[in-house]
Image 1 (cartoon, rainbow, N blue to C red):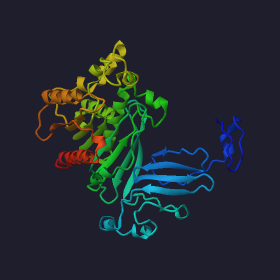
Image 2: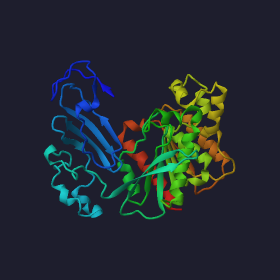
Image 3: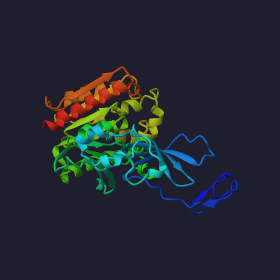
Image 4: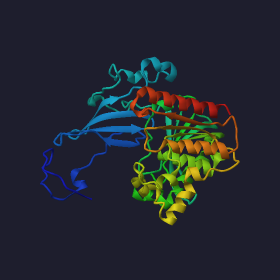
Length: 390
């Protein structure tokens, strides 16, 4: 690997446009917390500063905004949510009290001199994170990440399987406070890094796009089957969750194995792939051709028809309970969710204990913390009622 640097004076002065090997810079191993899933660069506007700002994410730690000093190799935590205030010791025990004195009054700032292995405000003492490689239908190993409460974990817990697998985007496995309610009820939260996503390079993305899109769905189904076969999640207590193109993934997986899932949440999902891609005047349709295929091409049209959720609903088969949310202000047409829900209700076997619910809004939920919290609470209540009551 060759790196080109401008002239910057830190420890060594490098001449502009002179090639150098990475080893010449004496790279250091950064002292990171366990289970880091994502590191994002912050707004480092000062090119000559010796401090770099990052956001560090983990499935068992709230996002930490940190400054890293390139000269002395030390971290300084600038901002991080404190989930373990003193008043929560009744829930978590007294283990946190020993390190509470190192936190500031708002639980946010720590000095770089005091940083140690225990100073990250992580929750690994209370929530465990595990990793598995799950063989898919064609033998490819699919990474599966599990998060669960150490206190409430037992055989046959209910579980929620997340997936996305599109646009080469990395699956969001960051700690999410809204999932704490499920974790503390004994749920296992699982993340399937199916093909089509971007966590494992360009080839991983291409193997789950266009004519190979079914690979994403097979990967997701295989992860669900693995959770049940290993007894990690109890049979008839597995739920799926997908956002946007992840909604396509979960809905297609339900069409493939409706008996595998007890419930599902589809947030602003992409469900009527064929009809949407045949109308290039719709927003961002041209971009979606690269990801899902170009239906004017006969081979790609047949491929799209094979996985499109709206076109593959099974008739007279019991489907899981599904909660579909959509908005008049999203990139995917609100009519897609409405058409899919209507067709599922019409074709599948009716079961009053497995409702298919359509939740529509005219508001932009992402722009209102209140509406976002309300929607998340509704989804969580739906999952608990549909899965825990079986």
